[in-house]
Length: 85
Image (tube, rainbow, N blue to C red; front, top):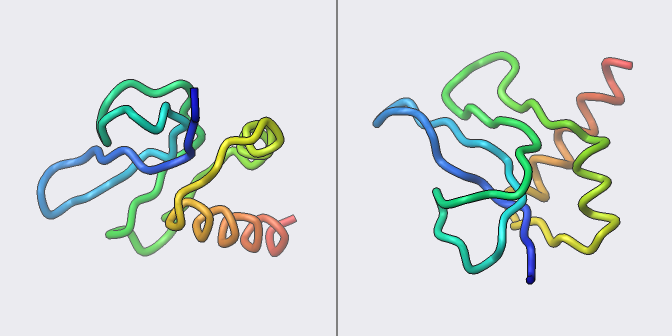
């Protein structure tokens, strides 16, 4: 099973929101997932990205490949965490 870290769309039309999840690469975009790592809400001004970085690192250590979008979100979340703490 080849797992990927990618976005799962939630929310209504014109109010997009996404969950950052680990799922089988063959699963449809909004299908079953293995683990939920956080959320991404592009329409909000504050607190747009919430990701459990420890859990994400756990999956990255096990060979899960993030999509391009999730990789950039992880980078931003790590930068914000470094600023905050």
